[in-house]
Length: 480
Ligand code: ASP
Ligand code: MG
Image (cartoon, rainbow, N blue to C red):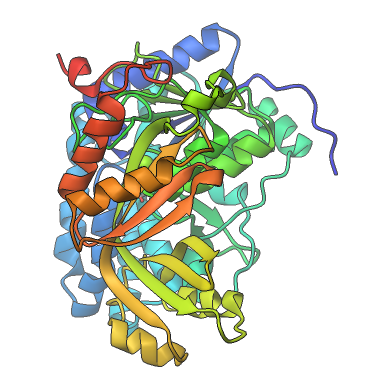
């Protein structure tokens, strides 16, 4: 084990798809980089693909099978060309990469096969394109910048099933003094790709959709960076999805654990896998917004907000709900644990069919497993087909449900029961199961339709709260 020294002066600046798509935002990006440099930090930019490009590349795989890929590639070229001309960069900077993409798509057309390996190769181009544009832009702004291929640095861990191996990779994130001195020698700002890595055989792999945050955290951990900044289209983490609930409140401080629970249970602002590398090396994560750069956003660190909680008898039953998250498309598997069964093996089988586990509860002699489907290359198995594939007696499977979770930080008392009662009144027949994880800081409700419920819970439990210790500004007020 390498001894980890004091924090280095590296800062990791991750910019998401909406940040890198607009020419005007590039001025902000250049400004943030300059600011970091002038305060003695060495920035590494980790970029996502332009907005929607990863979706278009996933679609391109299917278009390559049917042979219409040349038109789709043309459309992708035009999208990127639009940004390139706004930034007044040379028109041909992406041509070699587009040539490579075309070759891979032609091969897919010839073989008539989408494999996890060619899926990863095709979808990785989004980040290769955006970082090439960024490299040229920053150098033209007199910010001396080097392009580093993330696949030379992030090495994935072998996984048994090939879909997850290529498209949902985990990487090693141990502190690396060698990497640190190698990058220090470059003596420039570094620009690299989010979302992509390579396996031990040198194949391109992906870190899972929205995985650029995780790339930033991996770089942060490997360099023992001073901070990881996640620049996105909302100023931090909110008490609910601000795009759906305009009264959502900013959460200025979260612990790694709270942020992880929220991300795992559906808060879209941060990728759940980004928390562990940062937490295990105590690297703070600051979530900020590219079009509101002055706003401090959310700081995720070891600071424990529960320390300020009122622990008197009177406060015991009252929940301190800080956020409500929703995961809109879950598959719920329920099995009675009367017979002995290897749950891990069951999870492995469901995972191999293209699902990801987000929650597991083993209480009251019943096991509840909550999955989401992530395989974009194949249609999801029907509940009946999944049941047949697993062939286990007494198993119940139901998809197209939602999981609504309340993130609580008081960890005690009967608050969970009260919320279950409220939900039952509000949604007669609509609450299918309540999974009580109050000792771990959340209550998760399986419901058939979450829309009104999230609004109502947010109104009663968060908007009406008098204690504002945990909350910052309202999303709505930020819009004015
Ligand atoms: N471009 C990838 C995606 O859209 C990764 C990311 O943006 O985080 O999923
Ligand atoms: Mg994101």
